[in-house]
Each structure stands twice: as C-alpha cells, then as structure tokens.
Amino acid sequence: MNDLLTAKQVQDLFRVDRTTIYRMLGDGRLHGVKVGNRWRFPREEIEGLLAGERRPRSYSSPSPEETLPIHCMRLILDVFADIAQIGSLIAAPDGIPLTPISNSCRYCSLLLDTETGRQACISSWRKLSTQSEGSPKFVECHAGLKYARARIEIDGELKAMVIAGQFSLSKPSQPEQDARVKLLADRHGIDAAELAVAARDISVLDDRKVRQIGTWMEKIASTFEYFARERLDLVTRLRRIADMSVLK
Image (tube, rainbow, N blue to C red):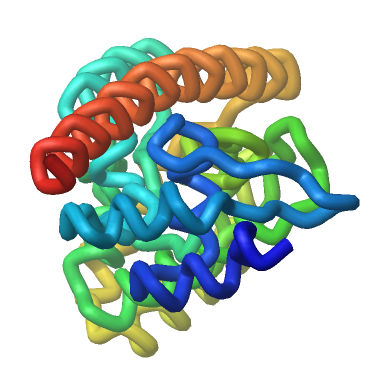
C-alpha cells in the first residue's frame, strides 16, 4: 500500500481540488486503481508527473454564457415570439436575463425601463426556477400577466430557462385594471396615463393557444439543450487541449 497514494494525497501534491483529480481520471491524464470503493494512485506515476512539473489546471464549471449559443438562441426566440404574439427571453436560474426580451409589449417595456420594475420582473422570473413541475406552468407575475418557463438542463442541472408570457387569460374589469395600473405606476414611478394606454393592448389568449405555446416552449428548450451539449463538449475539448499544452 506504500506504493499507492490516496486521492487526498494526490490532491495536496498537485494543489488542486478533488473534482480536478477525478476529472483527470476520467480523461486519462491520471491512472488509478480501485481499492474497495476508493481510488488509489501509483506513487511512481505521480512522482513522475511532479518531476516533469506537470500540474493539472483546476477549472470551474462553464457559465451559461459559455455553454449556450446566446446569439443563435435569440434569433430563434425572435421568431417564436413573433409567431406566438407574446414576449419571450432566456434567463439564468437566478432570474437574470441572458437575452433581451423578444417582442416585449409596451406595458411590460414601461415597467422594465425602471430599475424597480426590472428587479420585480427578475424576481418573478427567479421564482420560476423553483417550480417542481417539469413542463411549463403559467402563473401570474408581479404585473398581473401570465408567464411560464421551460427548463434548459445539462446533465440534469438547470442551466437556463426559456420564459414566455406577457398576456392575460381574460380581460380584467375596468375597475380592476385601473387599480392595478395605479398601483404599478405609483410603485415604479411610471406615468399612469401612459401605462393605462399600454394596458389596453395586452394580448388575451384562450386555453388552446396557451397549451400550444407551452408545447412550443418545451420543443425550443429541448433544441437549446442539444445546442448546449454540443457547445459544452467543444468547450471541454478546448480546455483539455489548453491543459495538455501546459502540462507538456
């Protein structure tokens, strides 16, 4: 056993984290043997790597911006939003937008043009990431409109969301609409008359159209997942090439 090192010993020698050690095992830069359920590494090989000053780099997981082809995704969202006549965007799990909103209605644009309104929208988008449902479920945002998300996952981890909405399921009564407009105008410092005019143009969709939009969202998210997996594979390969060039 003296000729075998533990993962912790190798980690300390290379001054990297445990994840990097197992990543090196996976891509063939290190060779080990299983003793029970733990990995052990030949001392001679590790010492040889150290003698040649070959050190592994420690990489963090790629960010959504690195993994997702944002420019291409935005073009697809533009088409989707125009056809569906709704607003749509890509957001990170924390609600931060990764793309501008495609086909945003005037009502929402007025809110988003204020700092407090934008933060309220981001908070609403963030809540979508906590939904337990796998499929899109339309809920009400802080401004009283319907919206939902479709998950973009890589290796079971939520990387981003396709978000679509900015519509109502039924036209509110005039007193209800006036009260909501006044509340939002006062809260976010927006001209109430301008917001009221914009509210008149909010789309009202029937159940059939809403179900169709949910189906489209899932298909778009699935397509984006495929793009992301391909891109992640490329990023990983490039990192390995850069790592190997340093280790030689």
